[in-house]
Image (cartoon, rainbow, N blue to C red):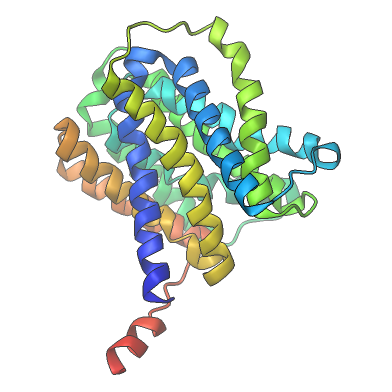
Length: 296
C-alpha cells in the first residue's frame, strides 16, 4: 500500500465515520426521510457531474433492475434506518453498530450457500454480539425513550449492507462507478414514498442544510470514488480495513463536536466488535509495505 493509498484509506474512514455525526446533527430537524432524500439526490447529482466529466455511461436499459436492488439494500433502506436511529442514538454508538456489517454479510452468505461456518467465524460472531451487547448495555443513550427500536434499526441497517454485499458477489458484473452512480439514482426514487410517513419536524438552518449536503456530496459521492479507487489499487481485502477504522473516527468526531461521553464500555465494546469482524472476514493485516518504507 503506497503512502497515497494509505492517506486515501484514512480519509475514507474519517468521511464515513463523519456521516454519523452529520446524521445526528440533521436527522432531529429534517426527519429521516427528508434528510436521506437530500443525501441521495445530492450524491446522485455529484456523481452525474463526475460521470459527464469522465464520460462514464450508466447503461440503464440493461442494468436498471440491478441498480434498483443495489440502491434499495445498499443505500435507501440502510440510510433511512440510520437516520431514524440518529434521532436517539449517539454518533459513537451508530458508528460501532455499523461495523457489524461484515459479520452480517458472513452469516447471510453462509445461510445462502448452506454452508457451516468455521470455528474462527463462529468465534468472531460471538465476539461481535458480545461487543454490541456491552456497548448498548452500558451506554446512557440506551436508556432514552425509543432507544431499543433505534438500536434495532441501526443493526438492521448493517444487516442490509450484508445483504447488498452478498447480492453483489452473485450479480452480473457492472463497472464499480456505474454501480455507485446508478444505485444512488435508484435510491432517490425509492426513498420518495417514505416522505409521506416521516414529515419534516423542524425548520432547517444553514448548518443543518450544510450537514445534509456533506452527507450527500462528501459521505456518499466522494466516499464512493475513494472506495472504488482503493479497491482498484489495493484490492477489496485491504480496502476492507476502512470497516475497522471508521468507528474510531465516529467516536472521535462525536466526542469533539457533540460532546458525547466515551466510557470504558465504548472503547471495550468497539475493540471487541472490531476483533470479531476481523475474525469473521478472515482479515489479516499486511505490514510489508511499512517494513519496506522503513528499510528504504
